[in-house]
Image (tube, rainbow, N blue to C red; front, top):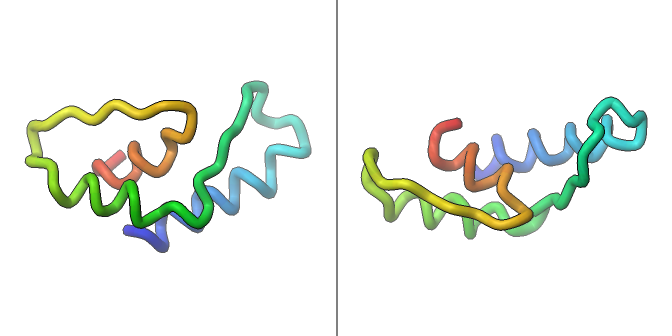
Length: 63
């Protein structure tokens, strides 16, 4: 899970400068364990809320 999060975040960092994403981006590179650990503690039906670094939490929860 942590590797998947890292790869997605690195891809976002790669394409963002091309202005293919028209939104603010706050990466969580180096903080993958936070999302993975939080998701591991949640049950399948639990909801998770995140702030401005939400890609990792979404991916860790199965998104």
